Image 1: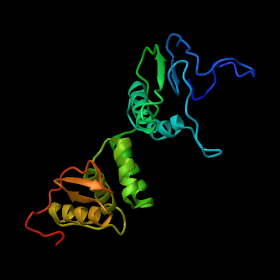
Image 2 (image 1 turned 180 degrees about the vertical axis):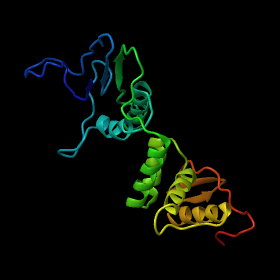
Image 3 (image 1 turned 90 degrees about the vertical axis):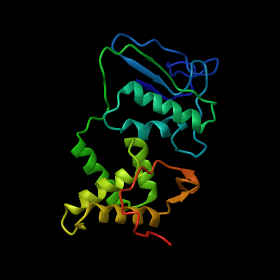
Image 4 (image 1 turned 60 degrees about the horizontal axis):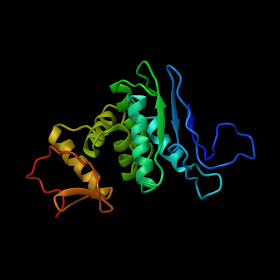
Length: 206
Protein backbone atom coordinates (compact mmCIF):
# COMPACT_ATOMS: atom_id res chain seq x y z
CA UNK A 1 0.00 0.00 0.00
CA UNK A 2 1.30 3.45 -0.93
CA UNK A 3 -0.15 6.46 0.92
CA UNK A 4 0.50 9.87 -0.56
CA UNK A 5 -1.74 12.16 1.48
CA UNK A 6 -1.65 15.06 3.90
CA UNK A 7 -4.36 13.70 6.19
CA UNK A 8 -4.03 12.82 9.88
CA UNK A 9 -5.79 9.48 9.40
CA UNK A 10 -6.58 7.02 6.65
CA UNK A 11 -10.23 7.62 7.58
CA UNK A 12 -11.09 10.07 4.83
CA UNK A 13 -14.01 11.60 6.73
CA UNK A 14 -14.16 15.36 7.06
CA UNK A 15 -13.66 17.23 10.28
CA UNK A 16 -10.58 15.44 11.57
CA UNK A 17 -8.42 17.16 14.18
CA UNK A 18 -4.63 17.47 13.95
CA UNK A 19 -2.10 17.43 11.15
CA UNK A 20 0.06 14.83 9.46
CA UNK A 21 -0.08 11.20 8.50
CA UNK A 22 -0.90 8.72 11.23
CA UNK A 23 1.46 5.72 11.28
CA UNK A 24 -0.07 2.34 10.42
CA UNK A 25 1.52 -0.99 11.27
CA UNK A 26 2.13 -3.36 8.35
CA UNK A 27 0.53 -6.77 8.72
CA UNK A 28 2.39 -9.98 8.00
CA UNK A 29 3.65 -10.11 4.41
CA UNK A 30 2.78 -6.50 3.61
CA UNK A 31 4.48 -3.14 3.07
CA UNK A 32 3.00 0.30 3.67
CA UNK A 33 4.81 3.30 2.22
CA UNK A 34 4.03 6.82 3.44
CA UNK A 35 4.76 10.07 1.62
CA UNK A 36 6.24 11.50 4.81
CA UNK A 37 7.19 10.64 8.37
CA UNK A 38 4.54 9.90 11.03
CA UNK A 39 2.59 12.98 12.18
CA UNK A 40 4.15 15.10 9.43
CA UNK A 41 2.48 16.76 6.44
CA UNK A 42 3.50 15.86 2.89
CA UNK A 43 4.19 18.66 0.44
CA UNK A 44 1.70 19.06 -2.41
CA UNK A 45 2.32 20.53 -5.85
CA UNK A 46 1.74 24.25 -6.26
CA UNK A 47 0.26 23.74 -9.73
CA UNK A 48 -3.38 22.74 -9.88
CA UNK A 49 -3.73 19.11 -10.91
CA UNK A 50 0.00 18.46 -10.58
CA UNK A 51 1.54 15.49 -8.81
CA UNK A 52 2.89 15.83 -5.29
CA UNK A 53 6.63 15.83 -4.65
CA UNK A 54 6.38 12.24 -3.43
CA UNK A 55 4.56 11.03 -6.54
CA UNK A 56 6.98 12.90 -8.80
CA UNK A 57 9.83 10.98 -7.17
CA UNK A 58 7.94 7.68 -7.07
CA UNK A 59 6.99 7.47 -10.76
CA UNK A 60 10.49 7.27 -12.29
CA UNK A 61 11.70 4.88 -9.61
CA UNK A 62 8.80 2.43 -9.66
CA UNK A 63 9.56 1.53 -13.30
CA UNK A 64 13.22 0.74 -12.60
CA UNK A 65 13.89 -2.88 -13.62
CA UNK A 66 15.09 -5.60 -11.25
CA UNK A 67 15.21 -3.50 -8.09
CA UNK A 68 13.79 -4.83 -4.82
CA UNK A 69 10.85 -2.89 -3.43
CA UNK A 70 12.76 -1.91 -0.28
CA UNK A 71 15.67 -0.54 -2.32
CA UNK A 72 13.27 1.26 -4.65
CA UNK A 73 11.64 3.11 -1.76
CA UNK A 74 15.08 4.07 -0.45
CA UNK A 75 15.74 5.79 -3.77
CA UNK A 76 12.36 7.54 -3.56
CA UNK A 77 13.16 8.71 -0.04
CA UNK A 78 16.53 10.11 -1.10
CA UNK A 79 14.97 11.93 -4.07
CA UNK A 80 12.22 13.49 -1.92
CA UNK A 81 14.71 14.58 0.73
CA UNK A 82 16.86 16.20 -1.95
CA UNK A 83 13.91 17.89 -3.66
CA UNK A 84 12.48 19.26 -0.38
CA UNK A 85 15.88 20.02 1.14
CA UNK A 86 15.16 17.67 4.02
CA UNK A 87 11.74 19.06 4.91
CA UNK A 88 9.91 15.87 3.89
CA UNK A 89 11.15 12.38 4.74
CA UNK A 90 9.15 9.45 3.32
CA UNK A 91 8.56 6.52 5.65
CA UNK A 92 7.70 2.85 5.29
CA UNK A 93 6.61 -0.04 7.50
CA UNK A 94 7.23 -3.51 6.19
CA UNK A 95 6.91 -7.14 7.18
CA UNK A 96 7.47 -8.68 3.73
CA UNK A 97 8.49 -12.32 3.80
CA UNK A 98 9.83 -12.52 0.24
CA UNK A 99 11.56 -10.34 -2.32
CA UNK A 100 9.22 -8.28 -4.49
CA UNK A 101 9.93 -6.38 -7.72
CA UNK A 102 7.56 -4.03 -9.53
CA UNK A 103 9.35 -4.54 -12.83
CA UNK A 104 11.49 -7.51 -13.86
CA UNK A 105 13.30 -7.48 -17.22
CA UNK A 106 15.97 -9.49 -19.01
CA UNK A 107 19.14 -7.81 -20.31
CA UNK A 108 17.81 -8.06 -23.87
CA UNK A 109 14.55 -6.37 -22.84
CA UNK A 110 16.45 -3.60 -21.06
CA UNK A 111 18.68 -3.02 -24.10
CA UNK A 112 15.64 -2.83 -26.38
CA UNK A 113 14.00 -0.35 -24.00
CA UNK A 114 17.15 1.77 -24.07
CA UNK A 115 17.14 1.74 -27.87
CA UNK A 116 13.46 2.67 -28.12
CA UNK A 117 13.71 5.51 -25.56
CA UNK A 118 16.75 7.12 -27.17
CA UNK A 119 15.38 6.65 -30.70
CA UNK A 120 12.10 8.35 -29.73
CA UNK A 121 13.82 11.26 -27.98
CA UNK A 122 17.46 11.60 -28.97
CA UNK A 123 18.58 14.09 -26.32
CA UNK A 124 20.77 14.62 -23.29
CA UNK A 125 17.65 14.62 -21.12
CA UNK A 126 16.77 11.08 -22.20
CA UNK A 127 20.29 9.85 -21.46
CA UNK A 128 20.29 11.47 -18.01
CA UNK A 129 16.88 9.96 -17.20
CA UNK A 130 17.91 6.47 -18.32
CA UNK A 131 21.20 6.76 -16.47
CA UNK A 132 19.32 7.40 -13.24
CA UNK A 133 16.65 4.72 -13.49
CA UNK A 134 18.91 2.03 -14.96
CA UNK A 135 22.10 2.80 -13.06
CA UNK A 136 24.17 2.91 -16.26
CA UNK A 137 26.63 5.59 -17.33
CA UNK A 138 26.06 7.75 -20.40
CA UNK A 139 28.71 6.15 -22.61
CA UNK A 140 27.33 2.69 -21.86
CA UNK A 141 23.82 3.79 -22.81
CA UNK A 142 25.05 5.27 -26.07
CA UNK A 143 27.08 2.12 -26.76
CA UNK A 144 23.99 -0.07 -26.28
CA UNK A 145 21.87 2.24 -28.43
CA UNK A 146 24.44 2.37 -31.23
CA UNK A 147 24.94 -1.40 -31.27
CA UNK A 148 21.19 -1.97 -31.27
CA UNK A 149 20.77 0.52 -34.11
CA UNK A 150 23.52 -1.14 -36.15
CA UNK A 151 21.43 -4.33 -36.11
CA UNK A 152 18.35 -2.56 -37.48
CA UNK A 153 17.55 -1.84 -41.11
CA UNK A 154 19.30 1.36 -42.13
CA UNK A 155 21.56 1.33 -39.08
CA UNK A 156 25.17 2.52 -39.07
CA UNK A 157 27.77 -0.24 -39.38
CA UNK A 158 31.29 0.18 -37.99
CA UNK A 159 34.27 -1.86 -39.15
CA UNK A 160 36.14 -1.32 -35.90
CA UNK A 161 35.05 -0.84 -32.29
CA UNK A 162 37.25 2.24 -32.01
CA UNK A 163 35.35 3.83 -34.89
CA UNK A 164 32.08 3.33 -33.02
CA UNK A 165 33.60 4.75 -29.83
CA UNK A 166 34.76 7.82 -31.74
CA UNK A 167 31.25 8.24 -33.15
CA UNK A 168 29.68 7.92 -29.67
CA UNK A 169 32.06 10.50 -28.25
CA UNK A 170 31.18 12.93 -31.04
CA UNK A 171 27.47 12.39 -30.37
CA UNK A 172 27.60 13.16 -26.63
CA UNK A 173 29.59 16.31 -27.37
CA UNK A 174 26.95 17.36 -29.92
CA UNK A 175 24.27 16.89 -27.23
CA UNK A 176 25.98 19.39 -24.96
CA UNK A 177 27.98 17.20 -22.59
CA UNK A 178 31.33 18.77 -21.75
CA UNK A 179 34.57 17.59 -20.19
CA UNK A 180 35.58 20.31 -17.74
CA UNK A 181 38.08 20.26 -14.90
CA UNK A 182 38.76 16.56 -15.44
CA UNK A 183 35.13 15.47 -15.23
CA UNK A 184 32.08 15.25 -17.47
CA UNK A 185 29.23 17.70 -16.94
CA UNK A 186 25.94 18.78 -18.47
CA UNK A 187 24.88 22.37 -17.75
CA UNK A 188 27.76 22.44 -15.24
CA UNK A 189 26.22 19.52 -13.30
CA UNK A 190 28.50 16.45 -12.99
CA UNK A 191 27.27 13.31 -14.75
CA UNK A 192 28.30 9.65 -14.83
CA UNK A 193 29.83 9.47 -18.30
CA UNK A 194 32.05 6.39 -18.06
CA UNK A 195 34.98 5.56 -20.32
CA UNK A 196 35.43 5.84 -24.08
CA UNK A 197 37.60 3.35 -25.94
CA UNK A 198 38.38 5.55 -28.92
CA UNK A 199 41.83 6.04 -30.43
CA UNK A 200 43.43 8.91 -28.42
CA UNK A 201 45.45 9.89 -31.49
CA UNK A 202 42.28 10.89 -33.28
CA UNK A 203 41.31 14.49 -32.50
CA UNK A 204 37.59 14.74 -31.70
CA UNK A 205 37.34 18.50 -31.18
CA UNK A 206 39.87 21.27 -31.66
